[in-house]
Amino acid sequence: MKFEFSNPTRLIFGAGSLSRLGEVVSRMGTRALVVTGGGSVKRNGTFGRAVASLAAAGVSVVECSGIEPNPRITSVARGAQIARDEKCDIVIALGGGSTMDASKVIAAAVYYDGDPWDMIYHGQEKLHVPTRALPVVTVPTLAATGSEMNCGAVISNAETSVKSFIQNECLSPYAAVVDPELTLSVPQDQTAYGVCDLITHVTEGYFNGVDGTPIQDRFAEGVIQTAMEWGPKAVSDGGDLEARAQVQWASVVALNGWVQVGTNFAAPVHMIEHTLSAHHDITHGAGLAVVNPAWMRFAARVRPERFAQFARRMFGRPAGQDDLSCALEGIDLFEQFLRSIGCPTRLAEMNIGDDLLARYAQDTLHIAGDGNGRLPGRPLMSEADIVEVLRSALK
Ligand code: NZQ
Ligand code: ZN
Image (tube, rainbow, N blue to C red):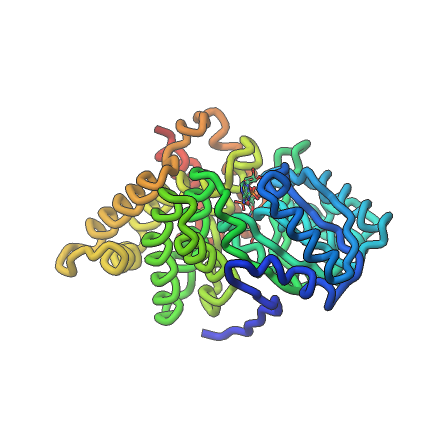
């Protein structure tokens, strides 16, 4: 293993921490662009409480509402314009991963005169790499993406049906105010999709990283086990604050970089899912629940010992069994878990048929391919491999 690691985001975690928002923001700014989604934060009172905390700390507020799930580049451009016009000096993301991702790119787009889509890598010849951004404070209202404490963002272009990402240190939030109380109102289906998303962040590194990372393996297994223990509780009783807190902490840990340190991992399941949500505007975590087990069955044939380890450690499968049978049983059990919390596991459940399978594969390779027509991961995937995985998940 050889690596360098840094995560500069200050994390303020715990029930009630929203009341500290003003104090945290006022260390870095006096006029905040508060970015919100489709209105959930208004309906459940989070917005009002956030604004009160900011006002008490002397921070004035300008609003950018209406960030859509699978946030669009047009909303990013709109938000950046508001921030410039209103001379905002800090951006606050109050919402789920979509709102947080849009906020990060808005913060960088404020300093860029061109089209912010230039910053999102989508196979273009000339990528604009931002070097600075307004400070961002994330306040997640949904436990899923881990966006609150990482430097990535995923943005969609509805005109071209492309969804892709930017990862840049200047997008690291200055602080994340993570208050599990804000997730009490998340509906059952979104709660389940969030659990699937956070688990998939960890399985990507676990199955696609380099060999010889035993500590990282145990971190990943700990996150998965915690999510499988507390996730169902949060799904069955949305008012269970302890379950909400454990799931939210798991979602932060799953993608703030620490679990994956030194694994040099790729994320083929995410790359394939992003193409599906680009074409069909489905919820990311739901798409992952379909793609991940199908991909695991494909990859287990190449590397059964790794998937057998997963089956033995996560599901207590016996040691004597041959690796491939054990691996496949573990994947079945994992899929059953996803179904038990209400996730779809077949494309048909999301009304996706087989007419565009080749297109999904080509788009995925266009954005995330290695330059030789292969999708990075273990194993590398060709266009035909991606089609095969998706075909196996049709019905
Ligand atoms: O828009 P509002 O009205 O707020 O409603 C949202 C939305 O409809 C609702 N919601 C959020 N908090 C709520 C709530 N409803 C009631 N009570 C609350 N407290 O939930 C719906 C989904 O919200 P969204 O933000 O889209 O969900 P999520 O957090 O799953 O974010 C998904 C986006 O993040 C990207 C995904 O690709 C997708 O675009 N990702 C970002 C990553 C990152 N930056 O690190 C990594 C991930 O792998 C992922 O790709
Ligand atoms: Zn994800």
